[in-house]
Length: 532
View 1 (cartoon, helix red, strand yellow):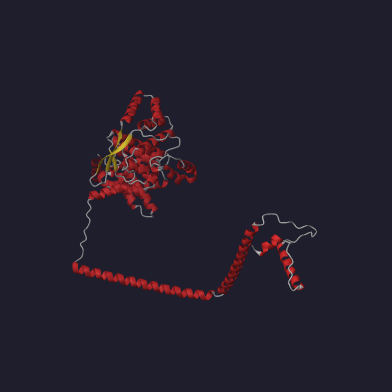
View 2 (cartoon, rainbow, N blue to C red):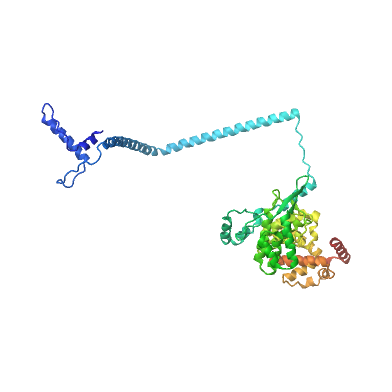
């Protein structure tokens, strides 16, 4: 127990100590010391007449408190020591601050030394590299140089690699919401995107984004299997398959179509919400009823059902997965993609529609059962993918004769013209290509000007090249021209494009009038043999 605790316990009951010698001075000194210590321990009383309070509590607790107080005293001493050290350090810092300038000079010297060391390292490394090169040359001189074998690549392999690069699909462009965000801003569709991202228990497909009002997906009996793989592994053939349960639903669907009752198809969708043919047929019914939003949503649900049944090796982006259109189970996938492309175009998502065109064409690029070549140029122009259109034409022209199609004959020069303007280059190549197209398909000019509401000049109407082309025009060519002009006329109606077309038409008329009759007849017959 400390002396302080002892005095606190005894308080005023401290006995008076008298020396044996009876010295009163010693007594008075000891009494003064005790009084001073009690004065320090006790608070100063405001009223001296009040009685002192007696200690209430367990007196043995003071033993522990005394030890704690000793520890507190030691801690206070340590704090005092640390404060003294801090003051000394602060004084040293103040002294160092006055010497900042010479320290900077020392640092500069060190930096120079380090630069010199780095230079030495680089010189050493260069010397080592020179020694290694010299040893390699000596070894080659003794043993002879290693023969380098040139890689021989066939034309078929080059063509296959080029077609794969053309048909590669970027999966982020398969989502129309990203294009809408680029066109209208992120705030317009931000709320819808966040609500779809926060849903739980649903996958995130590429072809279509499932909506919250869709019923949860359940396997319908539709599956995909691998039929065969090419010897070089460049292409893989897949096919869709129906199990017995799905075939029974198909028979119910055929009966509903023969009955000409739309309610029966709706009943099938109520029981089987992801039946493909019912979704496509009911989408057509909604389209005829001018309910385009509902029709588009049904097609998206059909694509979602297809994607949930894909084979693990089936890839949408590589462009090397084939589907045989002649097989009945595969045709619904072609139809759903075809309809989805035009719904995307009507919504203004031309870049997304172009990616789906590449996907649809990659499923059977040799046969092209749905004639994607007749409208892929339109979406490339609308999406301003001019370089892709030119590259597609140059790589596919040798084995598909795309120059014989009116849409490529006029869309490619237009793409070359816009690309030249973007790059601040001359439009001479585009002018020459357009003039050749006007000589090959002169009947298209009046159709195009009529759609653009432009009256041709008198020089054009009096030219036999354009007037005689309207007479005896084959029905097939007339249909192709009407299809192209009815679809692509908004791209040509721009004033800049109309002026460019007018300039080249005048050049064609002048060249035609300067030719003699024999040359005109020869050109007319060769053109007929090429087209028909």
